Image (cartoon, rainbow, N blue to C red; front, side, top):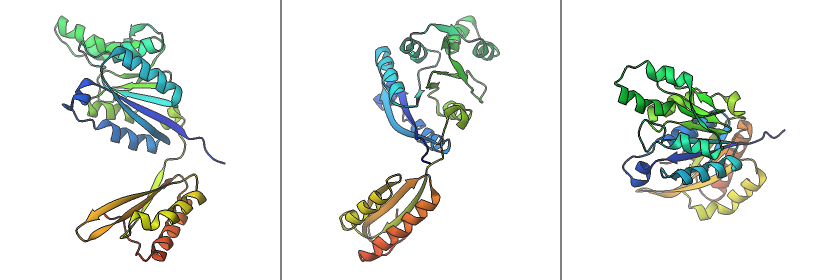
Length: 251
């Protein structure tokens, strides 16, 4: 029985990403972690800190994917507008979540600093929390949208608290690779035939260029490990038939 594919999209929110001042590292981490939870990350979008853009993007993506993850814009400054924008996307009011408030008030600060920090306690009415094992303010989930911090250490901690059961994930995707010193065009026909024989597996080719020659790495990705091994053997035969020698993936 074929399992339902559970899909996700990441929305990276932040002018600092688009300006190039900050390099995003959350995408790779989330993709790897979601795969282990049986969820396929299908798209990633980078958008600015503009309220209507956030609202429109979230509403579009939450209809198109099983889960949506956002990073960025839930800090203590005036341009951290993600929580308020998510609330508007769901036509919900904002509230100060008591559990987040307890965490924030546990660290003493002058009144004006505490007032700024309390911006991080705002969540839409009806949301549930996404734990933050670092001890800082939590993220939240509204419908199928998970709202998390942009700071990598905090974002990664939040992701670690999300379970496979919460996402309804399927089997994780595994991969196998075979390298060869053959051009993509030499094996394109045979590779397409293998793909046709195994429609539930992704079969891809990735060329490389080295001082000692050029060639192609063949990568297959799927959930059935025995099927992956079968395809590996077919690819090795294909490479030999075309005059090449199967090798480990070539960097």
